[in-house]
Length: 120
Image (cartoon, rainbow, N blue to C red; front, side):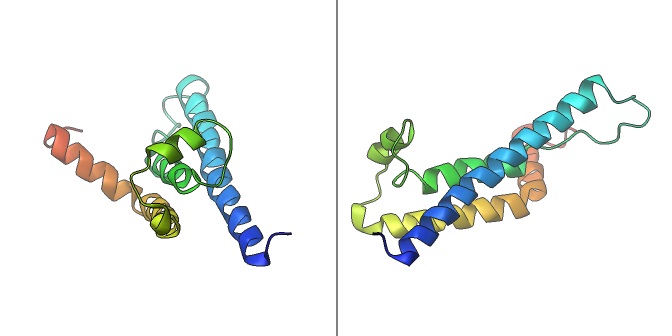
């Protein structure tokens, strides 16, 4: 039987993967509605994907050592972090996921200015 802390950590990792995945799905549905069903006069701003997608990427990296089906084992083997520091890596990736979700607008603005000047 696994210790309670390990079970809770695995549940947190599953939620860390599931929540951004559901959010990306919801944003995709909102985007499809925005593109094809909403009237141009009332549809408002286009749904953004930056936060949920970045959170999903970093959550996936955090869960690579704990999930046993592909592509997770391959990503785990390619990870240059030593085995002794994988717990720190997991916590750092989860922290980056939360940070990217919270500051997605600033990240998007920064990338746009770096890549294309002041184009909108």
